[in-house]
Length: 282
Image (cartoon, rainbow, N blue to C red):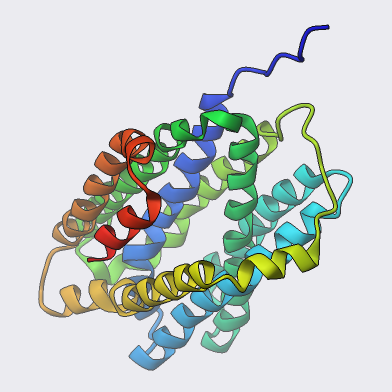
């Protein structure tokens, strides 16, 4: 009796989702605060808006993946999340009064943050024991991020500077349309074995000291990113830097990220992941 053969990994389809998701993030992360400034929002208001982004990153992934895990058609939730991301983002195309931007931000950020963790599980179901190939798929997200950061910076500057960042939602809209199309093109690996899981076993794992230490490290890392992601672009703009220069500065870090994705597989095969995390944090 022969073992069932595993389907070839759909590299192009998987890579396309990362490409469009992180391309949109490449517009959002550096330039969204400039867009909010162009809408007349104060520094405090921008802080609240970007706080919504991080708050939904806590709630949305768990909520959405839980719904998918208990569904007979989990792929439905990925596609629904992509559609709702696109629809809720359209609110920023409208001349909404400032108070209405807050609920629009909550809805958009919730769905945008919800879809990627589920898609990560889809990627891993296709890779199986070849998880070391993950970096070569995920790297397309970083390439999309770089391309959009550079291109959008040039476009915004080409319209007389960051004061015309009100164009940003119109520039981002096609990216969310392509992300939605990619969501409908992807699916879980065939023959996936689903289980109901064991909640008590999950909490036993979470309470392990090494797991708690990992969560603490991740928390502190994200805490350090908050001011940078929120105000770096505003800071550079106030000091007279061109938007294209701002895009270049954002790109530098992601270029190193691309290098990591191309080489990380061999490091994981040779070294313990905990040591690699410690070195990266240092």
